[in-house]
Length: 165
Image (tube, rainbow, N blue to C red; front, side, top):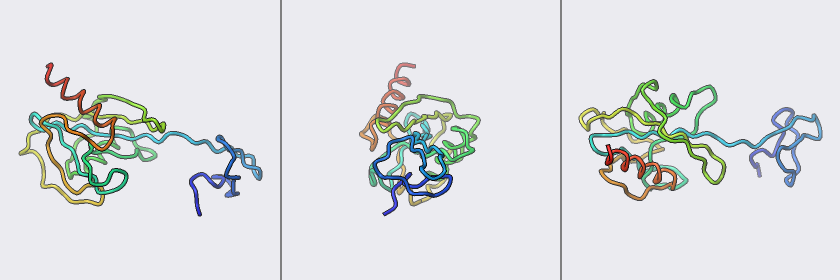
């Protein structure tokens, strides 16, 4: 069975399963590192609420989350946040409008960059497009449980910030 990082990315030789990271290939000497994968997540204010999606894929399929996903090679975090928002909701934002709201590290080492988009109204939203990644959207008017603890933490901070402004 294939396991992530089981083979040298340079020459393709199989690594020993117990070999720690960074893994040095016994055949070519190339070092393979296990690095965190960055994620871009978007907070999209709609009127006095915040847009969330019902996840259509694992992990946490069927639960509510902020729209987001992995940053592709060559993308800025703003481009990734705008792309993921479009893919999961059908909403288009200019990546230049996105501001850094918060950066957090998950227990597994994943780095999450939370982008804040400009305020929009419900009338600004296009019709929702069903996708494999999201099956529904809704606007939260107050904090609710979310699929991921860091999403929930940032959502709570967002609502606290607007309540105090």
